[in-house]
Length: 313
Image (cartoon, rainbow, N blue to C red; front, top):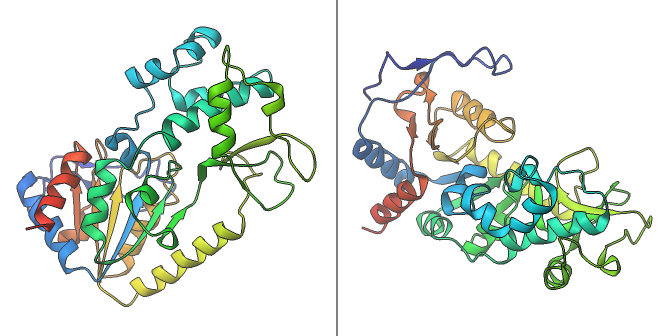
């Protein structure tokens, strides 16, 4: 594998002490990268997919720009463009009332969880791996893997789901399906607010409810969450013995300790594992992995489409 020595990057200053001085952008053609990635996937006995926000963004679920202004114009006008810069930032706005909070989050959930169909990137990804023994670890909360056909028991969504709510203080270990409620809120919303009668209350403590998203120490890890964690642990045990590929999709440095750093650690410690990193701007990989690592930058939707076309030949 020909690799550039001139474009080496030293990330060791901010990688929390992880030995990372050998990160590089690979200096090989896109065609060569695709050929190598296709071969690794074809030969793999196990495939572990790690997906971050970049995967859904590449699939079309962008949180900023025209998609944000088109869908959230009334919120931008009401609360101000200084605060409503994109869907992610808007979620941290200090809404003055529960009616205002759920006015925003019901809209956010409809736009990013319930209304979008299974998107082509995820559908093609499923076609690539469906005949393999696979598992998905994801920090995404938009349910796209399930919509595309991935089996629920092979998915560990660590950070929650836009379709569920929980007690704001996590007073009991249970989450609640909010689809029907959010659809009703979406119809009843006026001036960015939902009717007071629709504001959910905790059935146990009577307090406020919140989105089931990991944002503080009150995040509820219910029975299904722990079962999914167990399935992930079991899959990792299998990967210790078989030839496998870790396919990382759009994972940055927001929560690198969930996917990015652990994936690199696994490949570093197990010679039977190979690593494919797809990332728009951060597709650098450890040079020490040699031919066991491929870092492909640019448009992930095109990369997945090209891998899908190669797998169907």
